[in-house]
Length: 156
Image (cartoon, rainbow, N blue to C red; front, top):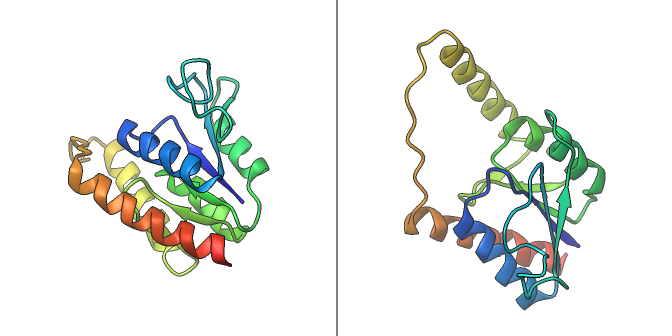
């Protein structure tokens, strides 16, 4: 079992929690991104045994495609990218976002439709301005969801 992280958009507090959890549970965490993420699997990190950085080529969806290549049933993927989550859910991979919400066969189509609608609004100039916040409440929600699904996968 491994944890795969769409690292480009994963907030720093969530990445740090993932690193600590991977080390504590002895599970490999793979962070995929188009750029180096400080503190992951490098010389400045003591987590090298349980963390690895997958540096992907520049270009749309290269990190997403690498995550799909590496993911196997029984793994856990962390992403807020709903199209990527959809691909993984269809392949029976467990997926949560950085706020601990699980994607499933039951909810992924609705989330994808809503995401597409919001993209259409934004492209038409009607989208709402979003100010992303990631504080203690969001981290706690992520930690709870992450622990719940990780425990289930490790037992199963």
